[in-house]
Amino acid sequence: MSAARPPANNGGMLFRRIFNFEKAKVDQLEKRLNQRYAPGPGFPLKAILFNSGRESPAKVQDISSNGLRLLLAHRNDLQAGHHVRVDLLLAQHRLALEARIAHLQSADAQITLGLGLLFPDPEPQRTYYQLMQPVVIGQTLKVMAPEQIIQDTLGFTKRVYVGESDSMLTMWHEERAGFPPHHFEFRMADYYCRGKLELNRPGTYALESQGDTDPGASRPVFDTSGGLHDEICQLYRWVLPNLSPAVPAETRTFLKFFAG
Image 1 (cartoon, rainbow, N blue to C red):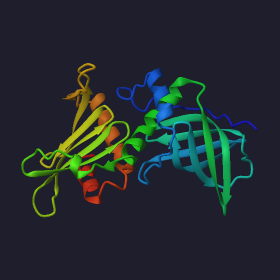
Image 2 (spheres, rainbow, N blue to C red):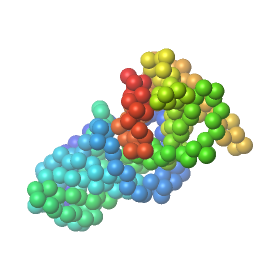
Image 3 (cartoon, helix red, strand yellow):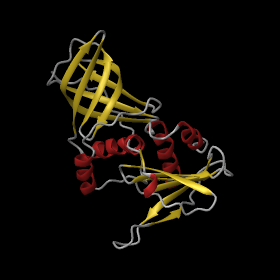
Image 4 (cartoon, rainbow, N blue to C red):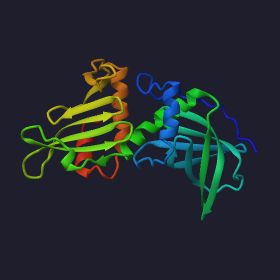
């Protein structure tokens, strides 16, 4: 049985200035991101499943480099092996993907679908991997052991969280009762956001490579009217609802202050 074919209406790449994955990088991501990542409850990702001339809204339970798990109202026309279409909606973006039902499970009035994604063209795959980045960066953050953190800032205690995609969240807490947050640096893959208590918005930084022998140095992004600056800020806003339980509530509240 074939999928219904309403117009795809793809909204293009989520990011045009960042995460511009080349073929070799896409191949790496396909292998590295093949585990499941659950979007945070506040992440505004929606899904619509198309099959047999019908469409059904669905909740994305988890995503991986080659699959999705959806929860939707029960339908009798879905069977393992069927080819379907699923549209992923995030803000103004709409990504239409071809998929095959790998397995399904019914419970009460709902059904859980495991979909294997099909990528006949490279651009939808690149866009899908862009969509995965806020989920992967946020959900994989774990507490760095205190003995591994170099405390080198007078008057402040650092707390560090590290995750996949070379992500690292560093929080500086004042050395007084309660250790309240004062400023932060959030490396998200090759991009930075930094913020201080005195400022009402984050500073954004890109990672500038200095050659094979230098791991890189950050430089500020000054195009505040749009482009790279806006995309890094959008990435930051999308990462926040995906933060793992390892990041405490106080830190989440502090970071949201800079989301705008």
